Length: 267
Image (cartoon, rainbow, N blue to C red; front, side, top):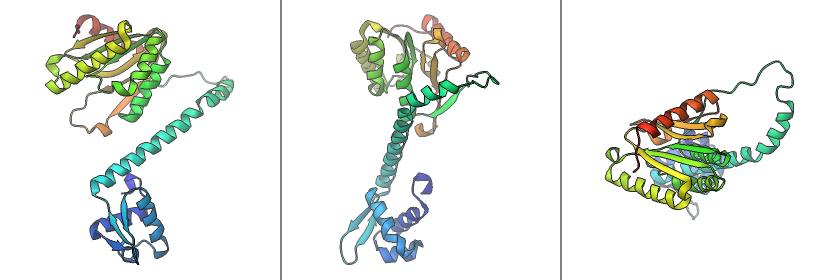
């Protein structure tokens, strides 16, 4: 369980408690190897995280939550930690860039080189990165997506971009490639897009949407986030790539334009 965010004592105590079902602190200390001086603190920590239930008494008895509840609680903790760390880094953005720009390459020994790709995990992190791209868009947002199920998470930033005069073009998966349930979701997303963005957005569908993501301001260098479908790979293990390399961004935009002109139609 150390790989799920617990330290060694917490992992040992919880593992043995899952086996025992219910135990006194002293019994659990002997079974798990957690020192008696630490066992009460460890159990308090597990209790506060919603992993262990306490039945008051003399002595108190401790029992584990159901495995699924434990896993969900640890996942929620990890997400909260990521959000806190992300907010901390984002809060330093303006100050850091202001100071760093003043000294960037002042030594004159190297030239700035744009990295080809930066890899991020698919899920909350890739959604946050997508929202950043929308917020920074000035002229164009090009979106390749299956059914844009993530629209509720990014709708506010997409609407704000459209209100700034940003043009939005979206290619989604065609009817033949979607199940009836997914087709309903896609059509609902299209309806929401049209209602929210009106004439600022154009939506088309295609039989092949191999690469998914968004491309922002390719005519000005711009940035892009993209991923590929990986059948059989759990969602939490998938990765997305972010690039600000002008050639890569223009190449992705060129692919999008070809699909838009020759391999898509109105839904």
